[in-house]
Image (cartoon, rainbow, N blue to C red; front, side, top):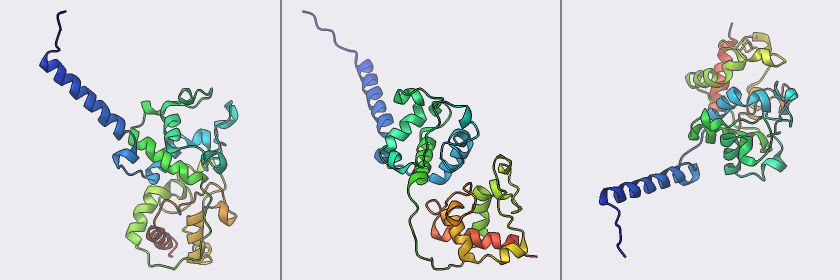
Length: 237
């Protein structure tokens, strides 16, 4: 029987394709690729692509939710969410409802978002269902105003407004109106620790608006105090 051998250049090409496929497969998982996820970026993307169905706080009560059947998943349900692996969450965000063989309006975001950005959303979603840890009163630190301004501009101005008046571009979608940091009397009546716990634990933890997210799992301790230092400058007469 005559044997047919694959030409050398074709065989080399096939080997290269195989190796490249392995690289893509392993790099799609940050745990394997050594990549770091960023829940802060994930929150920005969540507020852009996910909140309209899943809600600002992840409870499945976004403005589009009443028109959807079945209802969007409650991402704050710790008992349910803790049973899902990060890969499960990635798969449903990436592939939409067909990826989990479930009929819903969940779109496949892999057509719009890079793999790394989807993992960032997974990292942020994890912060929505992990119970907020009880903490002891923190040690007050000196905040850096310049650093706080950068953080405020990136993550707070969308609600509280660029100058702190509580008139950010998305405030019309929910109520009550965010705190006006330029209110000198109101801010003077709030000690730094009150601001700290409001930022760390979110509005719901202090009996205020549930639309104020908990930043404790997203910002470092120093960054929290940097933001406080900056918002203090907004109320100076």
